[in-house]
Length: 368
Image (cartoon, rainbow, N blue to C red; front, side, top):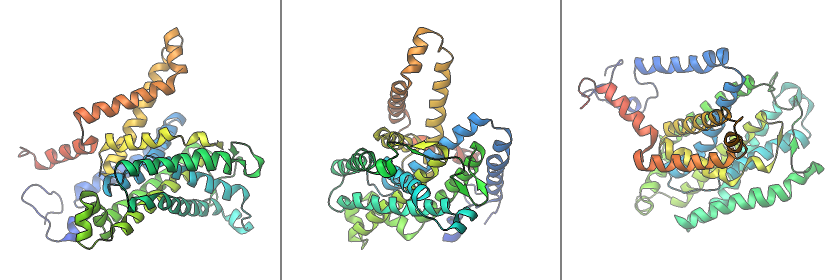
């Protein structure tokens, strides 16, 4: 087997090589270059605004990864995933602000990392609770039950009760120095950026390995045909619940991470539109592809930021000022337009186009 190229006519001889992460020296070189860009070039040359955009992309990837797992790999439609991000965010915040951590944990800076892990488990189990109807219903009816998760969790429980804990009102303020990982206080965009990279890379590795495991193959079988999967001996209910748990777990990590980028947290940070946004991200990036989650997140965040910068160029004009004031509605309109355009002209998403480009390069000059 060639260790440099894998053109047509060269095949893997065993499953280990076929499922390898970095299969050739060329791929290893690309990945080393990517890591150099992420960990060296961007931190060195990016300004505060660029870092904030990168952090937004990372947050979107973390949020959309769970949606991708449910919809793209297990076939369970969800329109309430922002609820699990909110559960993770509020669980971590309450643990940091109100839980009596031992002094040594505070001194060592491990209270916040532990709160992320606890928040992930809480969000995972909360996701399973709203995934229970998936054992009996699917399709349109499952959409309604996942929407219920959003309204019950954010609009009712968090807004009406959780937000009132401690008499703080709607918003929980996070004083400077509250978010600490080891000896580092997460108080700047660059520190948030590095933490985002670690969490995104870790979650992508977890999901990628799960998809290649027995659990992932069971999810894909359920997605393709749940009746056939059950006939093959797959416990459909068990694997559906596991998919909801893992999706909620990652959503909890996303929410717990995002509080490091906020001075205060409130229910307004987790609207129902954010659940729709995450579904749109995987539709544009490519359903059933981890690459699609990353590409879709980059596309949506960068396009919306570019649109906002374009509007700001004309803010001095009467119509530009009106557009800037109503930018939220303009953003929603642009989101809907992007979905329509991709569904018509690129229904398989950006990841499919990326796959075609790689194949063209790998098979050249016989790419036909």
